[in-house]
Length: 500
Image 1 (tube, rainbow, N blue to C red):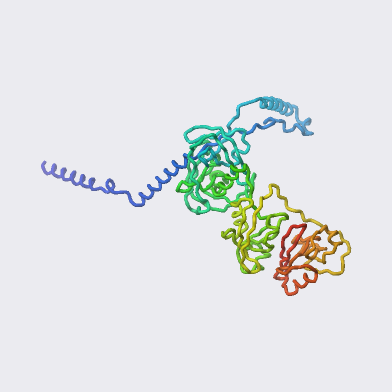
Image 2 (cartoon, rainbow, N blue to C red):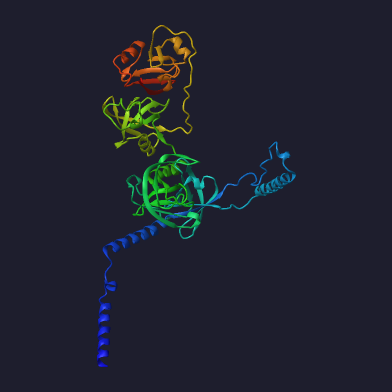
């Protein structure tokens, strides 16, 4: 009996010792787990901090005119041919629609049926959101974190950037901490805060998937870059912030490409700030432009083999009549390589640099001209609100030509005479005038038309048929020549190349 008790005590003692020494109860968290816990805490802190500056934007749309149940066949010549029961059905709907329309004309309380997100831009009541959230609003209400509600006044919208500014009568608000989207890196954490599907102050986490995205939708063609993210963005997130792990706003959530695709887009905060400041100051956005038509050198199959000493840059192809660069030191066929010291390798990069400028700002352009590096200063202008390309479709009147002429790959040129200037309504006095263009020729493919003025071949000025011929003497047409043209004041160049 004693042996059994002893064995039992010994067994319990051994078991107790095993439990007491078990590492599952006493071990410290691993370094990997500690790191994960720290990251978890970082996300919590960022969400708590950013949410203080996030607002809900409630919108009452403007009343729609006309009934929702109108007769779709009302103006159709086939309405009388419909079966009687169908005609009665549509007639009843039309009567109900007219009653509702009459009722809607009476004063009514606004119905806040739309909702988006926004952020506090300034502590004195300036709210930043998307223009598509508020542009058709009759009334706007801003709800702060905590539930306090204010009437909002839309003080400016910019459809092209999809940015809007709303003012509320409040001070001492917690403004969002603005970051620098220019320093944002692909792959870094991205956190979206907003009110998707009216689920207020939702937080989703992902990464910056890409930068410099161009976005086209059924409603808009945005001529700007976007930040792409896989942080979940859904209807209602529009206008809310996309922030980094430091709680700094790097973008304004704007678009999604399909639901549950993990592809969302945000306006870079540097552009959003620029637009917002102009809306606050002027109530509108005035964009800077140079007034030139440009191409990316690497994508310009005609010109890239003729550019000397440069492989990347932006080719100046045409001057817009009356544009700011027309009378500057910039020349056709210049390859712009930098703006204010920032390298530009494509047309989009050049546009991106100009978007951050204000109309009237001067920019220093680095460029290559005939193999030589140069720097010139050009003053920007205000992009016209309505810009229409100049139509250049003209035809020769077929009148007799003078004896002195020359030909180049389908086009005929002559010295400018008073008669020719009058015939083609040209005011140019320098160069040679194009008097004919053969159908389906290389010149015709480049849209060169009778009445255009040739002012230069490559780097050689042209002021007569004699100098035109001299400029072509040693040129290899299979390699191509650069022809500078003036058409009704619009300057551009084309590369004419003889194909084998």
